[in-house]
Amino acid sequence: MATDLLKKTLDPNNDLTHRKVDGGQDIECSYKGKKIGYNDYLDIHEERGERLQKGKSLNPIGMFGGFGEGTLKKSYNK
Image 1 (cartoon, rainbow, N blue to C red):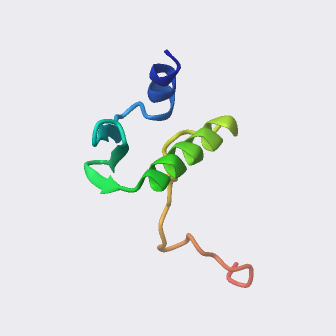
Image 2 (cartoon, rainbow, N blue to C red):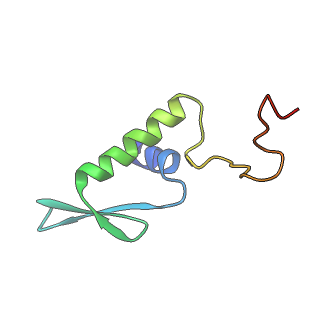
Image 3 (cartoon, helix red, strand yellow):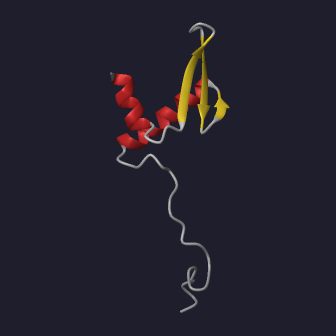
């Protein structure tokens, strides 16, 4: 089904979960075990979809080399 394909593509780590409550009248959503609102749930899916569309990974965390000796050389400090 399409939902299975979206789940595999946009949430490979199973960080996002949802379940129907009140006989299907409402949806309870969670992200990494913490309860979130449905709008936040949709926003996370949208952000992940946009990242994939741009050819980026789902994980938005980048690399940071840090500060230290020699990393911030100024042009006047040759």
